[in-house]
Image (cartoon, rainbow, N blue to C red; front, side, top):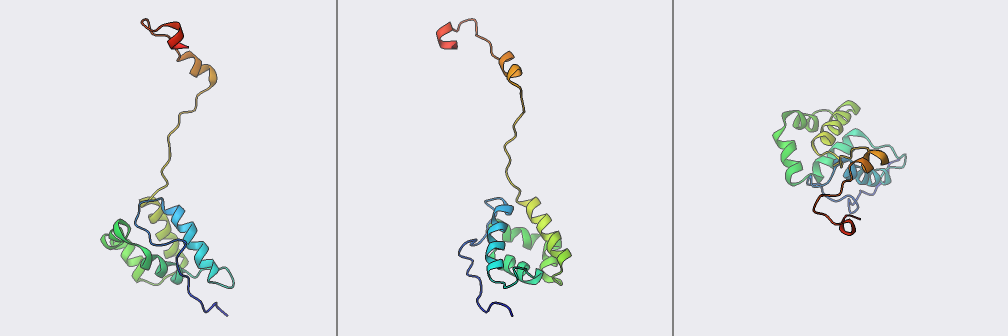
Length: 123
């Protein structure tokens, strides 16, 4: 028997696209799982919740994309949910800091004292 309470969405709140989708989705899933005795989130419940909570740029993205609009309007299956999640995370990705791996010896080779630089200021 499903839980009769409804999620408040106080934890996940609305989503406007200003943070990575994956971060917001974790909070949403936490709230939706808390609303289910089994811990399983039905695709129709998941997608209808997302549809209600998107605002700003995220809502504009849904409305301007025929494929996304169709996913929300069509039958809510596991396949449609997975397709939405893939597109959503692609559109609002996790921001990564690009690092170039270097070894200590490579970093040491790059250090040079400038001709006009004193030893004390270089060190």
